Amino acid sequence: MISFENITKKYKDKTVLKKISFEIEKGKLVVLIGESGCGKTTTLKMINRLIKPTSGKIYINGEDISTKDMIQLRRNMGYVIQQTGLFPHMTVKENIQIISKVEKRDPEQIEKKTLEMMDMVGLDYSFLDRYPTELSGGQQQRIGVARAFATDPDIILMDEPFSALDPITRIGLQDELIELQEKLKKTIVFVTHDMDEAIKIADLICIMKDGEILQYDTPENILKNPSNEFVSQFVGKNRIWTSPEYIKAEDIMIESPITCSKSMTLLRCMERMRSRKVDSLMVTDNKSRKLLGIVRAKQIQQERDRTKAVEEIMNTDICSVKPEDSIIGILQLVEDNHVSNIPVLDEERRLVGLITKSSLVTTLSQQFLDTEEVM
Image (tube, rainbow, N blue to C red):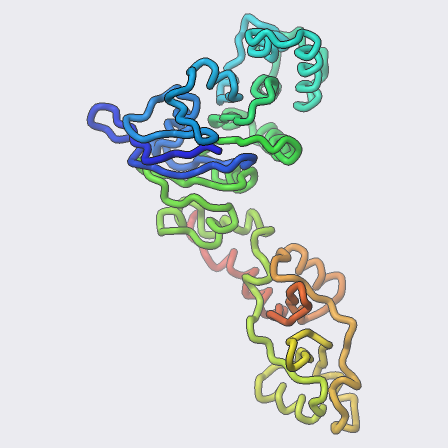
């Protein structure tokens, strides 16, 4: 929906942006983040032409924004800034309705939309006749969000909107923004300097440094596969532990678990366990690799006849997970079912990996082994 092509911005001898190119898909919440002076706010303000590029083009839905009427372009976008940008001499109601009235929209629809916006940001209608100075910082920011959404724009620009708020209010507004985005699916470009905030709210994160894009990716990929040492340090070595839902079964599983066929004798199973130093085997179909059951050393030890086939005693009541399941659910499964091994199965119930208590302990210990300070 929004496309940057070789955008450069220079102020005299200083180059703020260096031929950056990237695209923002419709309905995505993209966070621009980086150290002070990296060019993130400049990039945001180019979308509504508050700042003009020195060279390069920006397109919205395939149209070069430099050819569009500047006033109309801005009216078709919501804009929320750190200082709320509310007009102090106007009531809350007047602040929310200002753009709609300038565009001479239907008065009844304006009134209806205003009440909808108050409901959306969780404020009582009694606030409508108050002035911004009569509101708390969090309430003012909610009104700023309400005004930005009031004209139902496709694009919302948010420039560090929550950074001046206390932590509790900030977390609450982040949660509300996530809920709003799930319902409305707007294209939101959000500037922040807070990595925790970026990971929490973003569909995609654009990490910038010295006017360049170092990595533009999902929060999960940035946490797991930082593109270089700067990104790794900026994100923080242990940052993924603040978002454990991004740690998946496929990240921690043993990829080649020890298996046997259903026809293998118990004696041979015991020999295989001893030689491979494991206490259980995954019983799979030789052709399809589908998991049929699990046999444990304790089960075999209780059998006198070791010539039996493993299918006669294997356990078919199996707890399993999918490759995309998070470590949070896996830990709960281990606790609820008191199991030591959890097979990882694909959609066809083929065995693709195994999670053991040992692999879980190793994974969990990583958050304590790295003592580097998180930036």
